[in-house]
Length: 195
Figure 1 (cartoon, one colour):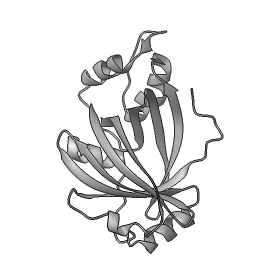
Figure 2 (cartoon, rainbow, N blue to C red; figure 1 turned 45 degrees about the vertical axis):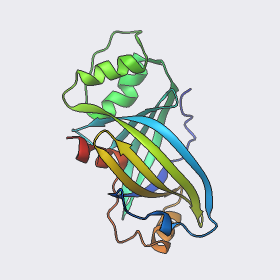
Figure 3 (cartoon, helix red, strand yellow; figure 1 turned 120 degrees about the vertical axis):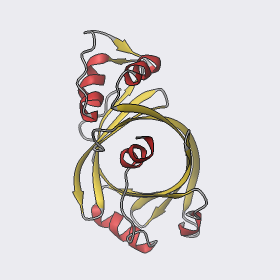
Figure 4 (spheres, rainbow, N blue to C red; figure 1 turned 120 degrees about the horizontal axis):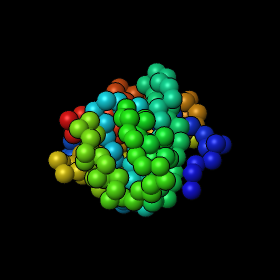
């Protein structure tokens, strides 16, 4: 299923830290909503950090960076499509955002194995498998998470805050002291550790 045009972009702020960092202590008491685990595969480009392309829960999930505002980034979901996916949707929505120009057979349908094979043949992209354990919570009008993530090259902690309104994110990151850090998206972080 494709994302509907009415899906609103969200302002996001994220930091990555060493695995032994205590991000859970930043979670306001009584605000935790749930703990979730997931396995996700990000398609990471050495050419750009403005597209977030991942495979998760049997779907292709794409977000595009639309703007930067102060410390924040505005990300717009552009595609959520159950796999297998038509090659045209993959090239138009995912591949183009990664800075690639691929010529795939018209009418081809791609499953996870085919997408991985295409990526493996491209020197400027890599698939990074990420295991996540996330604690979701709220800070004011913003959603937040404190997570432990692992890839083939190590483990890290990450904190993130997001909302449709920039003010909600700015107030939340100030409330828990993240406003002194630099914002780093998943595409930027994974590019940094993968290449």
